[in-house]
Image 1 (cartoon, rainbow, N blue to C red):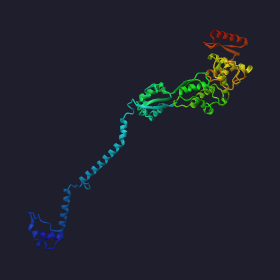
Image 2 (cartoon, rainbow, N blue to C red; image 1 turned 60 degrees about the horizontal axis):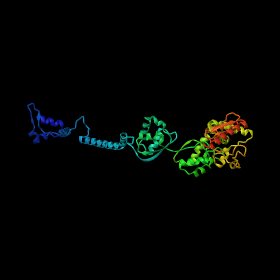
Image 3 (cartoon, rainbow, N blue to C red; image 1 turned 120 degrees about the horizontal axis):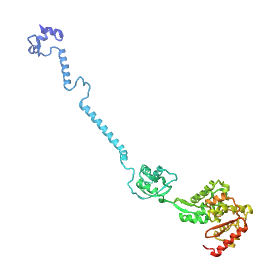
Image 4 (cartoon, one colour; image 1 turned 180 degrees about the vertical axis):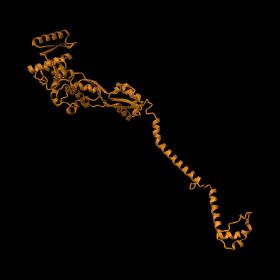
Length: 417
C-alpha cells in the first residue's frame, strides 16, 4: 500500500512500475517502523537530485569553500607572485645602473691626491673671486672640483691676497697645493720693468725690449698709432712725455702696443686726477718734462716750474740746456755746436715752449707743472753736480754769484764726482 502511495505522489512511474521492478523489490526493505533503507531512487527527480548532490560534494573535496568562492588556485597565485618579483628585480637592476654614478660620486673624493704632473699656465683675471679662480683651475685640470678649492681658500686667510696674473702650475694637483702657488706673488709669470723719471722714449724702448724680449723696432712702430695708445688729441700723435715712469708688470704674452698703451694710460690718469682737461694736457706735460730735465731734487721741482712760468711771462725766453740735449740725445753740458742748433727745440735760440715734451715726467713733476708755487725766482743753477745742490735767484746779480760758486766747484773737481 505504501509503495503505491509514494509512486502516486512523485507521479513519475505508472502503477505497474513498482510491481514489475525486481531491483526495487529485492534491494529495498522496511525497518521496524516501516521506513525504507538502502533502496535505489525510484524516480527520475530523485536521480537528478542525487547527481547534483554528488557534483557539489566533489567540488568541496577539491578545496572550494563557500568563503573562497571565486579565489584563483594556489599555482596561479604563485605564478603572479613570481612575475611580480621578476619585474621588481628588473627595476632594481635598472635603478642601480642609473644611480650608480651618483652613489659613486658621493663616495669618491672631490680632490686629486697630487702632487700633479706636467705644466700648464693659468691666468687669474683682475677682480676674479674664489669661485671664478676655481673654475679656471678646473678647466685647466689643475684641480678636480671647484668645491675642493673653495673649501681650501675659505680655510686660508692668505687666499684673499691672490694677485691677478699668469701662474705656471701642474695638472691634477691637490687643491691646497694649488692654492699655495697662487697666494705667493713670486710665482706670477710677468714681465717686470722699472722706468725711471726723465728718460726719453728712445731710452725707454730698449729697457722694455730687454725685459720682454720684444724687438725695439716693434715699440717704435707701435708708438706711431696714437689712437691705439690712447694719446690725448693735444699730443698730436707724439708719445714722448706720456710714457709714465713707474714699475710695471706686463703679462708674458703682452705686445709692444699693449705695454705702451698701459704706460700712456698711467700718464693720462694722473693728469685727469689733477683736473687737467685733454686740450691742456700737452702744455702741462711739456712744462713737466722741462722740470724733470732741470730739477735735481723733488724739493726743487716746484721752484723750477715757477721759474719757467716767470720767464714765459717776462720775455717768453726759457733758455734751458736740457732742450738742447734732447735734440742730440746727449746728456751733460752742451757744446757750442749743440747750442747753435736751429732745431725748434733749442730754447737757447727760440722763444717760448718747445714744440713737444723733452722727457717723460713723473708724478711729482706733473704736479709741480700743474700748480707751481708762488715765487719771484727767475734764475737757478746747480752749484754741485755731485750732490745736485741747486740755488735759485731773483736778480741777475744774485744769479752771477751762484754761477761763480759753480765754476769754483768745477775747477776744484775737474767737473767730476
